[in-house]
Length: 353
Image (cartoon, rainbow, N blue to C red):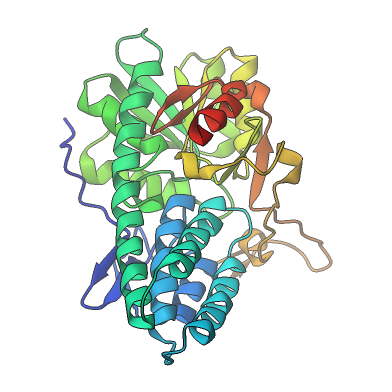
C-alpha cells in the first residue's frame, strides 16, 4: 500500500537557492540542478528541466523572487520596472501552461501592493513564492481525494490509464492525475496503472513509470497507439489526465495525444477525467480555440540520442499540446471538487461573490 508521505518534490527552496529535480535525466539518473539566478530559471523551464503546469508555476514564482533579488536599487519605481522585465523573460518560456502566467501575475500584484521599502517588497515576494509552493502541494492532495469520489464504483479495484506525467514531478508534490491514482492506491481501489509512453519526449515512459515504481504502484507501459486496443479488450476502467490550460467552457489543452485518447475513450464508453488545480482554468478564454499551442524543436521527433530516424528532405510539425473538447470530458477534478465542464462558469461566479 502507498504511504501518504510522498518524498518526490521537484521544486525546493534550499540553501538560498532553488533545487530542481533535473527531469531530463530521469529515470537513469536522479540529480538536482541548483538555480540561483532568474535567467537560469527561465532556461530550466524552457528546456523542461522542470515541467508540468503546476510545477512551472511554482518555479516561476521562485524565479520572480530570484530576479527581484538581482535588482540593486532602492528606488521603488525603478525596482518595479526591472521586475516587469524579469516577468516578461519568464513569460516567454512556455506559452501554453497558464499556471506560469498565473504565478507571475500573482507575484507582480504582491510587488505593487506591498507598502514600504524595496527590501520589504523582496521579502513579500519570497514569502509569496513559498506560499504558492505550499498551496500547490495541498491542492494536489485535495484533487486526489476529490478524484477518488468520482471514479467508477465498479469494479471495486480499478485499472486506470494516464497520459504524459501529471504526478509529483509535474507539481509541488503528490500530483494531479497521479494524485488521484495515489489516493486510489492508498484506499485499496487501484489494481494497476497503464501509462502511455507519450511521444515524442516520453514523459509517461520516463517519469510516470518512475514515480509508480518508487512507490510500489503496479504500472504497465504501453505505446500511445495501443490505448484503443487495450480499451477494446476491456483492460481499462477509466482515463485520467492532467491539464496545462482549461478554457472557461471546459476545453482542455494537455500533452499532445490527449485529444485522440479522449476520442477513443468516448467510443468505448470509458469515463475520461481531467485533474487540475483551479489556477489552470483560464476564464479569460471562452473556448479552447484561443489557447496558444507551443511548437517545439523538431529534433524531438526525428532524433533519438545521436541517431537520426528520418531521411533528408522530410518536413516536421511538432506541436507540444492538443485541445480536448469539453464534450469528451466526463468531469474536471479540482481542489474544490469535481465538476462537469459546463459547470466551470458557475464556479467562476461563486468565486467572484
